[in-house]
Every structure is written in C-alpha cells, then in structure tokens.
Image (cartoon, rainbow, N blue to C red; front, side, top):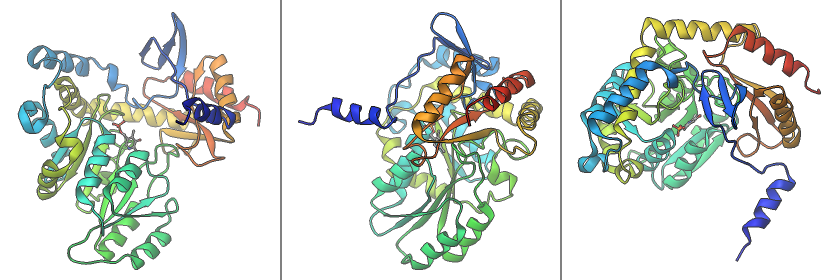
Amino acid sequence: MRDPRDELDQRRKVGLHRQLRHFSATSGAQAIRGKDTPLLNFGSNDYLGLSHHLRLIEAAQSASSLHGTGSRSSRLVTGSLDLYTELESRLATFKHAEAALTFSTGYATAVGTLTALLKKGDTVILDKLCHACLIDGARLSGATVRVFPHHSTARLRAILEKTPRSPDSRVIIVAESVYSMDGDFAPLREMVDLKNEFGAWLLVDEAHALGIYGGNGAGRISELGLQNDVELQMGTLGKAAGSAGGYIAASADIIELLINSSRSFIYSTAPPPSQAAASIAALDIIQSAEGDQLRAHLRQLMQAFAPGTSCQIIPHPIGDADSALRASAQLLEQGLFVPAIRYPTVPRQQARLRISLTTAHTLDDIQTLRSALAALPQ
Ligand SMILES: *Cc1c(COP(=O)(O)O)cnc(C)c1O
C-alpha cells in the first residue's frame, strides 16, 4: 500500500505542502491568532464585511430559533422550507432570470449543475483559469472537456468551429466574470457573441462579482446588460454576501431539470435555515443605499492601493512557490496576513500573494500594506 508520508514528503520538497492556519477569532479586518495576536487580514472574501453585519446575524439567529439549527433532510424530502423559495425568488429577480436554485455551497452548485446538464457526447469548453469546482464538474459530467487559454476568444472560436453539434447534444462554455486569483474580467460580450453564433450555452460564475459590480451589486453580467444572454448565471453566497451557499439562475425549464437530476442537490441535506435567512438579509443590504455606500468605500480603497485598480482582488506576482511562502511569512511577522497562492490553485511558477480588499479595511490599512509590499525583496 502506498505510504501517505511519501506523498506528503514529495509536496514538502517542492514547496507545495499545505497546512491549515488556525485563527481563534475574526472580526472586521482582523484575524486573531492564538490567544491575542491580531493580524490585519487581507485574505478574506467577505468583501462587504457582511458576515459580521448585525442584520445578517439577527436573521440567522431568528431563523435558528424558529426552524432549528439543521434542515433535517434533502429539499426533495421534507427539507424545502419557504425560506429557500423566498431566497430563490429573490435571486431570480435580482438576476433577471425566470428561476433560481440554491445549493449548500458554490462547489456543490458547479459540480451538480455541470453533471446534470452534460453527458457523454456533449462538449464543455472552459477558460484555462476556471475554478477547481468548474473543472471537477466538467470532468465528472462525462462530456468532452476542452480548454482555451485565459480570455482567448480566438482560441475559443477555433474550438467551437471544431466542435460537433447536433439537435440532441449540448455545448456549454464556462467562464468566471471576475477571476478569483487574478482579479481580471472575462470578455463576456465577445463570449456571448460566440455562443450565439455557434448555438452554445454560456455558464458564468459570478463568485467574486456578486455584491461588488453592477449598479445594485447584481454582478458583472448585469453591469454589462447581458442578463438575457447568459443561460446559466452562477455564484456563491459565501463571499461578498457574507453567508454560505451557491446558486444558479436560469430558465424555469433548466431549474426544473436541475431539481430532477442534480445529484449534489438531490442527495444532500438542505443547508441550515440560518444560511438562507442570512443570505436573504445580505441581498437586502447589497441592493440598498447601504450597499452603494459599501461599494463606494471599497472603490476608494482600491484607488488608494493603486490608481486605476479595478478589482478588489489584487495579485502580487512572485513566481516560485518557496519565495511566495517566504514573502507571506515576512508580512506575517509585520502583522499582515496575505496568503501565498501556489500550484495547483494557480499554474506552476506563477505563485503569488493574493490581496483581497474589503470594506472593513481603512485607508491607513492600505498604506500599511503598500509599504510592506514595497519592502519585500524583489
Ligand atoms: C469560492 C469559489 C467557488 C466556490 O464557492 P463556495 O461557496 O466557496 O463553495 C466557486 N467558484 C469560484 C470562482 C470561487 O472563487
């Protein structure tokens, strides 16, 4: 039998061994290590600070008091509380879609959706930098998996030209609207044109765009006016929405098909009622004047970091995995938590520090970070 210690040693040798980082508490822009070592946290996806918002906390508490802490069964058995229907109808409206379906996580959403909609003989075409859950869903589906270089619509076109099409097969193009490790934006307009030209569907993962982009925080698809052009609008409620869970917004027929065939939806206990309640409260705030203020503050922080910064996710390129770990450790000594991101999360030799700005940060925090980054060895 293969000894697990060999695999661990191999990872250590190439700087790719991973360890959990333990925090005793987190609040606002701080993460507390051990008894009382506060760190300025630049590793959180809670971009609007909603996970500690009183309205979300109260919504979660009252849902727990009313409905209990667990949902006790799959949605298709007895777990489908009205709270989920309410959340889904709110999401559908927000996304200008006919319907929406929620899952326990974004990961479960991607895997459950791609495996339900695709089978052998179909084709799924992904941007090279798509998130692991999209890759896993594509692979598990049994469809032919094709990959195009990051943002390359020319290569996407070339793949589409060679993809067989028939009335009873499907072709789905997959992209993220904002890439999680690069903080850049997919060329969605061009992708919509291509999928129309070739009769494909488009799945866009808005994990890092919900709450941040678009007039009312509906995301990049909405910002670009493409709500009626994207067949599968996906996202997570665990990042800017400060809660947990994933969603797909789509046509009523697609949603009904997912309810009937998505295995991560069918064979899993419904998420706790508190999760749905907190998510609804988050959608309220995201779409309110308070949401606008939070987004304005976030944009101000982005400009303070570097003029022209257009995304709250900022990669600081390093190169090899060991150097990225050392840089992260050096920042940690100065009280800054900035995670090192390594293969396989990003390509080999493209290790980096990943900075995420949140509304919990102050302009002073941004200056502290800028000075610390400038002092890193080049
Ligand atoms: C975080 C993330 C997910 C997974 O969402 P979870 O709710 O955390 O499971 C999916 N896609 C992208 C692009 C992500 O960054």
